[in-house]
Image 1: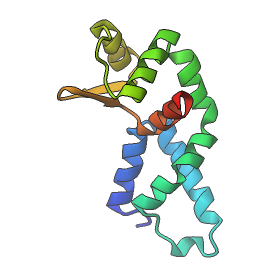
Image 2: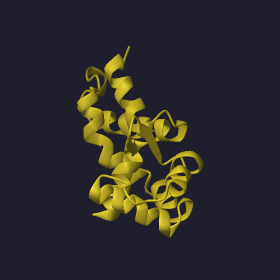
Image 3: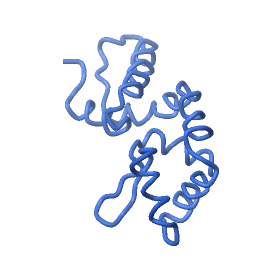
Length: 130
């Protein structure tokens, strides 16, 4: 067993189980481990996964750029920018929020709060807004 259950859970957290993103993260992980003096002696930890997320985002830049620029509209980018800046979606019509949840699969609603479905994509979105 190379990966602990906690490490696998962390990979699934960042990617929300999306196959391309799992493959992307796995590729970066193996590349980074292979740079170590003794790559087979190191077991990646959840913290190590967190550390390589910027490299994963950079490697998948075309995917995230397409998602930000083409998959969602300018109006939706404005809504997401508000959400990132203010932490809420007050005064946003429910129809628009529903589109970001159901059609675009960008947000998810848990209880009465909204969150990004894919934390890895959220890191790119935040980078675009800030």
